[in-house]
Image 1 (cartoon, rainbow, N blue to C red):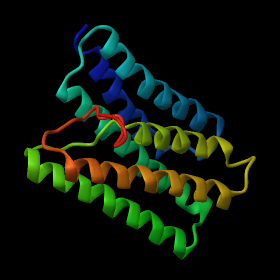
Image 2 (cartoon, one colour):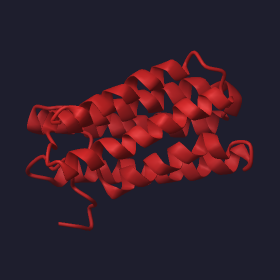
Image 3 (cartoon, rainbow, N blue to C red):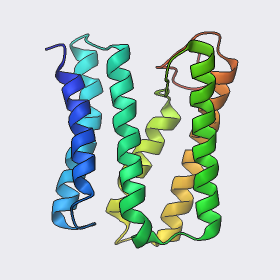
Image 4 (cartoon, rainbow, N blue to C red):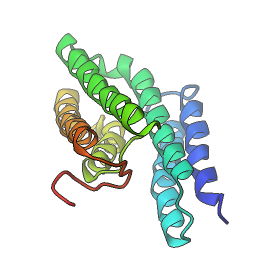
Length: 176
């Protein structure tokens, strides 16, 4: 029972990589994509309910999230065809996120990506993005996603810079 949440998180890595070989925005894509989203919800839920949360599980979950994001960027880039301004914005967000990880690595000697409300909201907006592509103008979706992601990345960096100990489940800079 203890490894089930980790297996679910790891399956998200595998399913995310499978998306690379599937026609983007097809029925097969959406089925696999929704399975990935469902796994992201269930791994943590099961771990908390069975009291099997662990530092390893949190890391696997964060790695699975990052793999999925990178895969989505790879798949959706040619479809979205972002402007130079958007590309620079995404690079800036990435730099902020990497800076936060470097701060955690230097301070706590470990890889860390926090489970803040901002990061959860970013995950939800990112998850909805491909689903909404056929219905909402691409630029509107991109601006919403980049804005939410920027705020959550900055919040995580502030938390990492100001914390005296690693708090993977820190909910927000506004909560103790």
